[in-house]
Image (cartoon, each protein chain N blue to C red):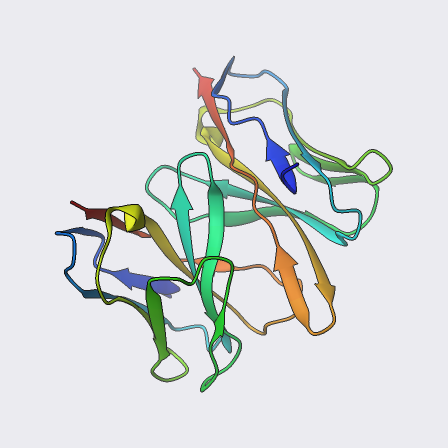
Length: 113
Length: 114
C-alpha cells in the first residue's frame, strides 16, 4: 500500500461549484498535513496547513483531517477559473532528527467559466 | 523578490551526457532541496542540504550529485544522464530543516534525456 493515495482526476467543474479533493494515507505517525497548489509549468505553493484532526478554514478553502480514518480533504467553495491547478496533498512528520514529507500524485482541477 | 530561481528552464540531453542544474534563493534560507516530479509518481526528494556545508540523500539519490556552493546556491549534477532521468526538477528552500515550515519552490527545469 502506498503511503499517500490521491485520485489524479482530472476533475472538471463549472464555476461556482463546491469542489472536494481527497487523499488517504497509511502511516498513522503523520503529524501535519499540507495542501500545495501547482499551476501549470510552475512550482507548488503552500495553500493550507493543519496539524490536527478537524477543519481549518481560509477564505473559500477548508482543509479537513480525519486521523482516525487517515483521510485528508480540501474543499473549495464558490470555485473560480483561477482555481484551475493541480492540488497536492502532503502529510509529514518529524521524528528522530529527520523529516518525512510525502507528496500525493496530485489532482488536476479545471474550473470552467 | 525573486524567491527561488532555477536555470535552465528546459534542457534536452543525449544518454551519457552530463549537466548541472542551478538553483539560487534570495530569502536567506538555510535549507535547500531538490525534487523530481514524474507523472503518476508525485514529488520525490533527491537530495537536500539542511545548512551550508551539509548535504544528505533523499528518497531517490542514485545518478545524482549535489553541491551546496554557498548559502544561496544548491546545484544538482547528472554525471551520465539516462532516459529514466527524464523528469521535471524542482528546487525548493525553507528557513530551517526539520521544521514544518512551508517550502518555497522554483518554477522547475524540464529535462528530457534521449
